[in-house]
Length: 155
Image 1 (cartoon, one colour):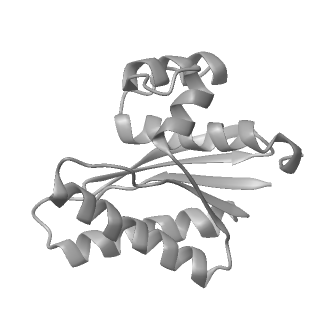
Image 2 (cartoon, rainbow, N blue to C red):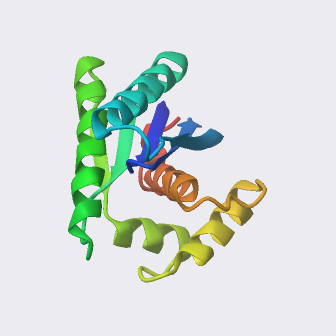
Image 3 (tube, rainbow, N blue to C red):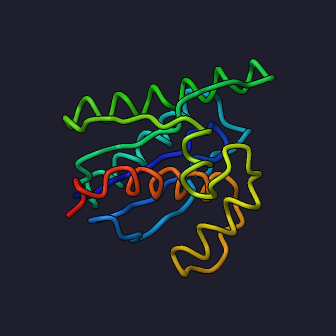
């Protein structure tokens, strides 16, 4: 089973691809603040569309919006997730959500772990160089947590 996990954001959207529980690749989709929001969302849509075409995921995993102190951030993250949900619907790909608490608990054993602890654990677990971009690391952690939760589905 191929999983595409996504950490949604308007400026930086992180993604990671796992196949049968094994990490394949990850990266960032970056948009420019100089562009209008519609064009930024279109850029994210097109980039994720290419990831779907290339990797043919059978599941998309997103971090559930939980709490944001900045209302502007929650709105743009929601809009970006809307783009992902649209792509999932167009391609008949089921979507799963994990909470930040679930992801941190699964990856580090502590639900209130900071981003550095999560990054360190994914680097150790996957034997990959440290991923220093928060959005990419969050997407990897989300996908890895999903793989741990669903080991029986990933064979």
